[in-house]
Image (cartoon, rainbow, N blue to C red; front, top):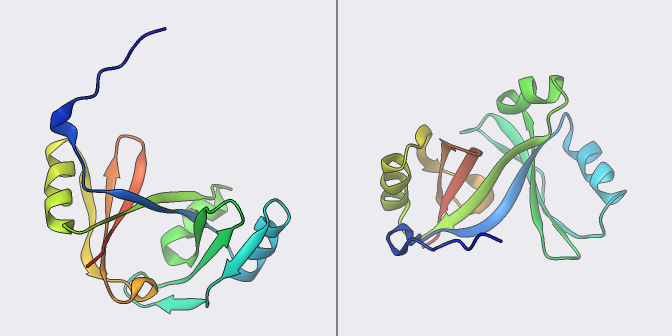
Length: 139
């Protein structure tokens, strides 16, 4: 077994928040997830004009939060049968985290802007080595 050493310089101010799931239709997405998981909470379906997409948060009995997204940003993924969209982290310093991630090779895809699903706190998207991440600024 290979022991891994934690790099103390890679301390992050990010905390896991949710997984983003692409779907054609939010209601159909909810029903599909209910077939596999016990859904304990379903938020309102909202239209986010900044993303040009319908969005909804759901929580499962095991504590996982999923964000369902349908609309223009995920149309190509859905057509290809890809449902994984992003992993989201919350942070109190969105600019600092964007800089830290860019310094490690991340590409900023979407500048921070108000997110209706998160009380108009700002959200940004970055492409990293393992895919798309969303950062939500928590105040």
